[in-house]
Image (cartoon, rainbow, N blue to C red):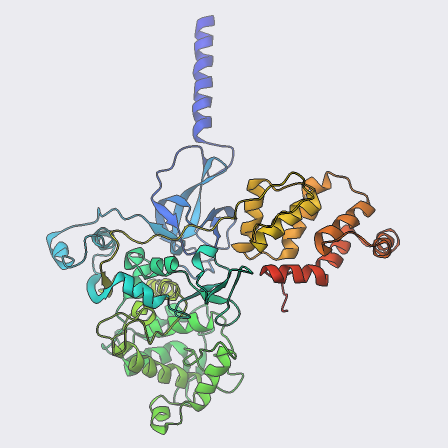
Length: 586
């Protein structure tokens, strides 16, 4: 009997042990290995994983740029979703040693190609002229969407030459909040003495690195359900094949879901106007509507709200690094060119939304779609041999990722329009002497090595002002050198996530470690002097703050803000190349 009980107990313990290996107490968590099949892309630093396929659901974790995950399946977004991405992935990802489950938009996922899609003879013949490295991706797409047509466009340009043209000064831009590996370190882009990047356009656009340009230019990285739409042929010649009812898939939920004056000053829905603009201009009307949302945002902008009496929904001519781009675009909408024939052709002045939609669509056809730049990709990276202009020039957009971003919007629009599985033609570029496999996302930059010294009071500059700032906070607040993990964490908070100096300092001043010191008010204030002003206290100043806390009702947080908004601290942050506090305008 004892043996039976012992055996039973052993079996129960074994079952519990096995169960504990594969599950945790957290719902949606599994303790097991992952067979990774995808990489996180298209994020500056990281992205939330959601409990359901909608950005209104609870975040169950965060995954970083370049992190590997396992995609279980794809699904449509829930009706509550506000992200604008129609396709979501159910994924497994590692979190604190556990495998967790959740959802993320397909836009942020680059799945490994399998090449296991249908490979019937007719399809293999259709893709025979593509390079072998393209075919696994195309087979996967064909398996999912057999009505789609893929056409190679041999550019006749070598890959290295194309990259060289697209990384010339001010040609390809990226957000300054992007990881450092995405930003150019060329002398015209970056000041190595200060660690600052030169802003090229608006307030936040800098030159992109060759590595990130190569990633977005490499067509193989976009041969997936989202990215493929940047290769869709936008020439539109079949009248009424895309009715207004299909265009509403783009306009609904945006400022375009409204009735406005058309090109003849007749009140009509935006969807009707875009459908007619497509027929008049021979440009796909779903693209036209999606492009307006891309340019003006879902809620509209000064280019679309008519506050000046004029409209420029496509932001044509709105390119400037000197004055506000939208101002320049609205001047174009009002005055056009000095050529009366030009203005008449494109219905300028654009004093109704309809004139901007229809006249602008004709301009897009005459200058891009009808001139050999008939895809989003070739509008951004002009290497179609049919183009009327030189390689790498006459490009509609400077944002490096803009073709892919707009491609995601086009995919959503086609799904909502009920046209997703129709016979769509995709013109996919092929360069000479391409790398054997798709170019990967550049690995995120990490903090430079820490220079340690014998005493925490000593300071040796790393040559990187942001690194120096983080090290200084460790020493002035916690009275110690940084640990490697914490140092890298705070460095990335500034360089990758764009966190302000004030918020970083808050993490130190109100940390558990600082709280554990049980500082008196006087000791607390002395530390703030060192951390924020970079000097020891003066007696009058110290007594002022002590009195404020003792008799003026000031909390430690009130005093903290008194120091964090000081001129000394602001200058320290600005000199290091990041914002001192949120909302700082200089």
